[in-house]
Image (tube, rainbow, N blue to C red; front, top):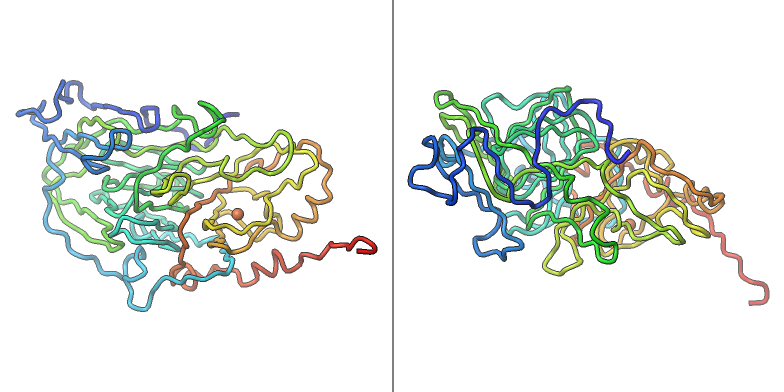
Length: 450
Ligand SMILES: [Fe+2]
């Protein structure tokens, strides 16, 4: 089936296409015709431009949207810092915390659910590299929440684009540009600056986030693969305009700014965009639609063939962040050790598991809602059990990963781990290396007489 079967039915409408120029109006006639900023926009709306790239970014990279709203986003009281005890999005927000750069292979047991917090206060920076103030690098966060955001609250990150990977529960995300329902096996991207509110229609949620401090996600080039396969352009879904009208109640706007949390009051709803047009918008994608390709002759190809989205560094082909998935697929390679090879990588590899069992780790230690990090040049590969099985396997065609979806955030940067990730969460497995690789037996047999 080239799409996921979801337990919770879709309830919103979307515009299809990746990096497409879309327009949407919740009231017919709300979009000005032929110009962006008329002297009097239709229906007394304010015109507001939202820039996702520099004005002068090359046309192929330029991202912006025009919003037509009841009141501009600027109409709020000053931001005040929120007490750092209520959030975990910056390793420096608490004096004793910092980033640890360590070469060990790391693996985490499933992260705990936390039903006491909402989306904003569920965010835990687990690892990262770079600095949002310099727009370089990325953050990797875990979320686990059990409460809706307050009905009169909205959140945005000035630090980067959120790529959200739900593992458990359903996210109902009301954004300025419209609403998205995001379920496990779907991902969504909320670009820098876009304001949103998260509610949990099916109860507690848990998952992973990659926050991209620099650039935006793109689809990977396909080279000799041609013009289709992997994630296809038409399967990305952007919301349609939806607005509320309320200029008499108090709302709180929360901003993640350089990792810290700020709050500002305003006396109107942030969700008052009646119409918009542009190519800077949130979107979602069903991982079940990924057109997976692989070897039909021999050898295990590089995992880059499973790249859903990529954010390139200044050096083409080298990614600040790749989002890579390992969907159910057929393995047919002949005369081949079929699992991933043993590996040391100049890139760092953070992996998570949405559900099921990952075929390269069958020992049971890599579980849904858990994670692993193989940092720059940290050696890794199949565990001893998997190696033994794969070395002896009968190489007939076999389907792997049924009911499973593992993923990887791969980065050219050395990824440091926060105090929360290494200690506070208490999920790091002390015996990861011992369990995975110390049991590997030498099989070398020196040829006689040599
Ligand atoms: Fe690897």
